[in-house]
Amino acid sequence: MDKKTLILTQVIMTAIMAVSMSGIMSFIALGPTALWLSTWPKNAIVAWPFAFVLGAVAFPAASRIANWMTKRSSVTVAE
Image (cartoon, rainbow, N blue to C red; front, top):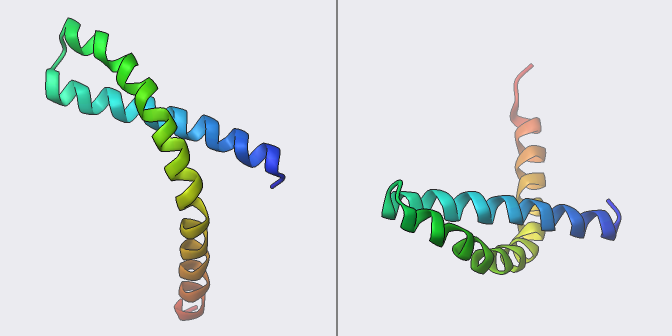
């Protein structure tokens, strides 16, 4: 994957995760209230940069682990 596509993918993926997770967690904490609706967008805006940075840092490690796991499991699978 070229660098431009990788960065755009991370922007989209982390935005989706930040919006959905901040909405879910604030809904659990506040319930279906006007306060929840007013705080959710603010929380999502605060969460997104953290999600982007953490995703950029974690992606290489997660990729290596996933590759290691799939290579290892393909050797042990009985046919």
